Image 1 (cartoon, rainbow, N blue to C red):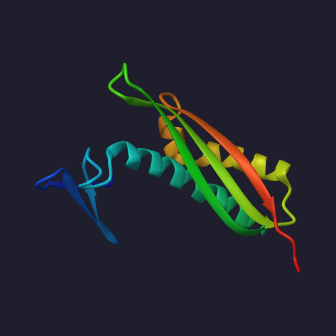
Image 2: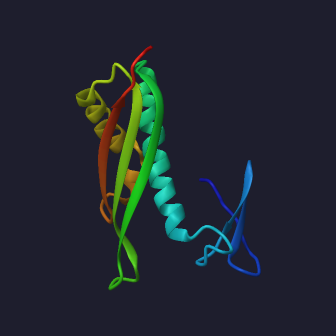
Image 3: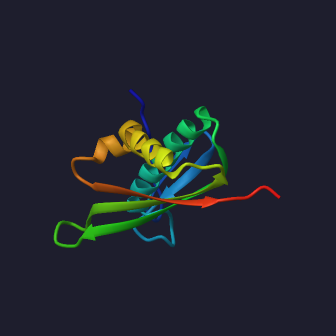
Length: 134
């Protein structure tokens, strides 16, 4: 079991992590908002697993970006109801069908996605940008 400790500050809370300090507050003037943490953990986990899969297959990836669109339900405490993750992969000799399979595999193996899958709809989209050798 892992334990995290948050301490109260003037605005929000602070957590001391091994490599950084993170301020958390509902007002983003004073820290990262809790929903942003949730979305970032889901997007970051999914992207990390996707990247590891591509690295194991020795795919020539030059760059990858992930953007997240968040839908919230105002009638239910403004809870996150859906997250759409768009992965933009740039590289050489990329097979979009294989990348789609890899993205499905990442979805199944991302611990954060699996943790929320019954309460938040997670949709992944893929854009592939083919780079040419000069």
